[in-house]
Length: 290
Length: 317
Image 1 (tube, rainbow over the protein chains, first blue to last red):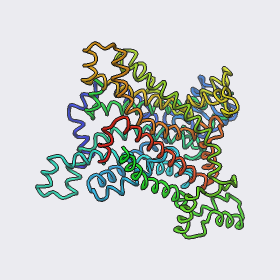
Image 2: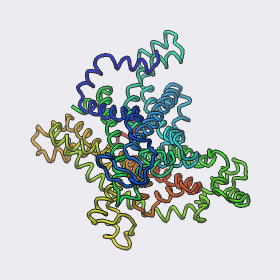
Image 3: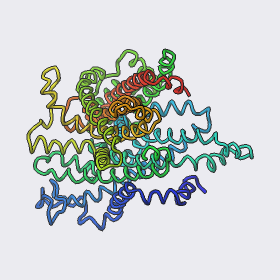
Image 4: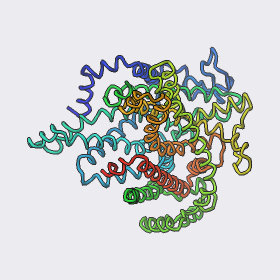
């Protein structure tokens, strides 16, 4: 079984699930995140119009019966734009989580397991982590050009060192445990030891970290978009809509209000999910909570 | 102690080297020809060639790398393409704005974050604790730049209490500086306040459960002494290490917050350099910020080792 597969299999077994089912923060977080996910998946059904459809007659309509979230300076329906924004934000966030998870696991496992590689790896990771996250992401998108794909690349480059460090730390501990030594003594090769014995047991802190990275990535993507370094207008990302509304803050504050609330709900949901997973998967943190 | 400081210094040398390499390679990963991109649409071949020669892009990469390091040694990070001025000077001029704003936000973070965390930990699992931690969690989840805009709508447009933007230097008028930086500092600090409150609460809870705290209680010390002296002092140790991270987050936030409030700081300089592809400013800005943060973290680590002698022995794995 793949490392992640077996970690999930362990998750499904009893204790963790029972713990999560009683964890109020986890349940609230799941509900919020699932809500956003449903909106993103069924955007075509939920959005009343296409996100770019303009009706100049209806410019700057405040939220009301006809337009629940109001319209913007082009008479575009903000409900449609925020709903399609959910899809793009989650797509970008999820891509960053998957790429960061894979790259971080590979690098972290290599560094923690093969000690000779480690010095170089640590120096490279520390160098990348020395930059403030958003500044580095902004710098990379400035070099590569503004687009959704480049935002994903930039955010992956920013968050991979952080996941790699976490995987490396758990690999360093686990590789010295008796059962790994036993596997080594019984003649298992590096690949088998890493994939079957070390990595599956290093997954818990990674899963927790990736939940938080999902949240950070959504916040950071909004910043990139707001600065004009994300997917270009008229693409309805939440950051773009907030930036477009900024000019009309006095007359039509609702344009920027709703995409910001959407970000807050999504990130809050993910943070609550992460808190719940951490309490359930990391026994040390649970002691502190008690 | 001296040995620890020297070892810590030596360990930051390769990292600093890596940081400067990353900054250098930013221009190398530009797809296509950076000179054409910088010169902009509709630039003539002559202009493109002029930009290319100015930035030294017509020379081999290793030569460029060599002159990048010669420049760093002299404190010369090249000239801004758009401002036509030295990158180092442009950044240093704007540094007071960013540093005073970050310092203000840091003070807010420590004052509010620590108090909130300690109060929540003293009454764990009561309504007060849950209310404070819910607020902290919401604070961690709000996008700072959006919060900044909403604060402008409320306090500048509706109530007309504070300006919606612009900057007054501290040297000109302290009151004016406070007025111009309060909304930006609050928008910047909220995320950090939430983080610090959560960390303080859990460390404080841990400290309160320790044997020495129980001993202090059983020998009849007043609760204030137990909490203030025995528990809180130990909470300060992890908090000191967090300050480096908090400052890094504040600098990240300053890019958008200075843009939202039109403050003439390093963050806004970088935000506009990015939009106009002014690569020397981006490279120099990233390098200076990262090097400054490394220096700050070095000071934090030394302070940490001074506060907690165990670190000097454990830190060198």
